[in-house]
Amino acid sequence: SQTIHQWPATLVQPVGSPLSLECTVEGTSNPNLYWYRQAAGRGLQLLFYSVGIGQISSEVPQNLSASRPQDRQFILSSKKLLLSDSGFYLCAWLPAGFTLGELFFGEGSRLTVL
Amino acid sequence: GQSLEQPSEVTAVEGAIVQINCTYQTSGFYGLSWYQQHDGGAPTFLSYNALDGLEETGRFSSFLSRSDSYGYLLLQELQMKDSASYFCAVNGGATNKLIFGTGTLLAVQP
Image (cartoon, rainbow over all chains, first blue to last red; front, side):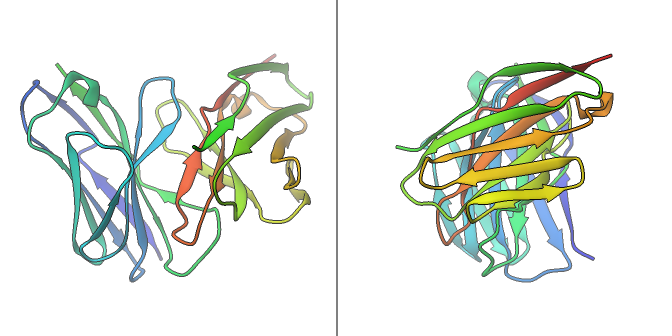
């Protein structure tokens, strides 16, 4: 079966510290991968998406970056966190070649920057 | 630019019917999706409309009018567990990049 895992689930980081969130997908190959961020009480903002290894598209300019070192691994990083980076980060995947609207989301990573 | 508009909050009572509307303006359009998100959880998929008309899945139905850039989610026989946020999302292209609306918080009261 196909599953998606995301970690860590919760983290509290000081301003200026680095960040690394990891997402892995199992049971599929060459998926489209996405990072979304959700501020408290708000909608989902698309940050990055990837259609293949090493292929990253950025939607919103910011101090975050994404990488896809392996087919089923997607990493969200920052060198120096800002207070405004706090939020609920969601990784999602979709089988390659599909044009459906059903994304599969991970459990999410709740980041608080102090 | 791309934008999706939904009402911010809707309140209804158990057993009632509620409709959540969504209007969109996007550069491309493949289809309209609906997601449910309970507080603290991840969004889960409810429905997808690529063509005009009504799609029914149990107590939930979703409608799309491409000419009007409009859709809605219809929830029937409301239950307390339906209290959640509901998001519409547009699939704007071949990369399946879903752009989400700001969400509608549905409160179901006894």
